[in-house]
Every structure is written in structure tokens, then in C-alpha cells.
Image (tube, rainbow, N blue to C red; front, side, top):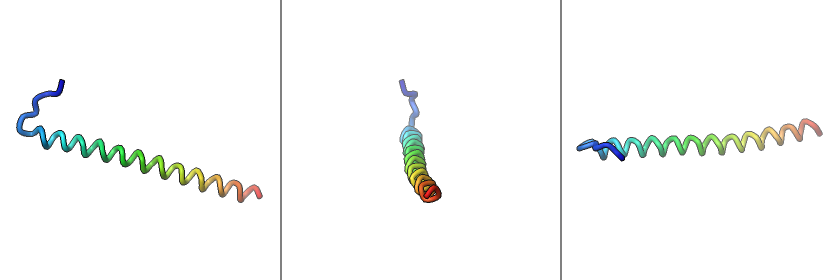
Amino acid sequence: MMPDLGKYADAVLSAYAASIALLVILVVMTLIRGRKLRAEMARYERKDQS
């Protein structure tokens, strides 16, 4: 299933792993920041309506 990468297999696979890890970190950070901003906006809206 996976092509023979020869002597570069370690470098290629570690680069794939690092890229996937960074993408996962970015997605998680974006989701966390979005939740915080939504909560902050809801607080401002409640304060504004009072």
C-alpha cells in the first residue's frame, strides 16, 4: 500500500507526522479560541441588553 521510500523513509514519514501534528494543533487552537470568543460575545450582548 505504501510506496518504497528507500533511504529517505524516515525523513519523509517524520515530515508527514510533523505536518499532521501541526495541523491538529492549529485546528484545536482555533476551536478553543472560537469558544472563548463566542462566550465573550455572549457576555457583551447580555451586558448590552441590560
